[in-house]
Length: 192
Image (cartoon, rainbow, N blue to C red; front, side, top):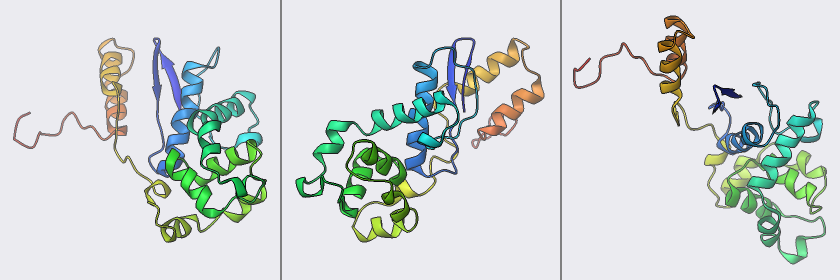
């Protein structure tokens, strides 16, 4: 989800998604917040690419793929003998690891650049984590992460909205609770 409130830009990313998917989602939302004209806050489904019904969502997916998987960098990681549509698992996972994205985003970019076809989506739809591990790569991108991580001034913005009486106390507390902040909880050293 991305939104702009009082010219402040804000996004939320689902911590239950894999880290690779989260990285893609962040880049997707950056498009909405900094590139898209006349952006209206909304909840997004990222990574659908050509299956996106909304043209701005497709643009956001393409922006994310281009930002996170730059053509010159991706191309440099593909051995010459694999450039004609015979991309190996090692190459796919190496690119995925170098750019810290999902396997799906990696394959989409390879298809977009003409190095692979859509059959790779089916081939790597299941079992990628085991394949990655067996090749000696780190599997952390394949699991959820960043639980309870809040970056930026989310809590400050919530407090400001409450102090300006734009939101009620219960809404303010629910916003803080959403990021696992309990202002009524005692601090460990006994201070309040």
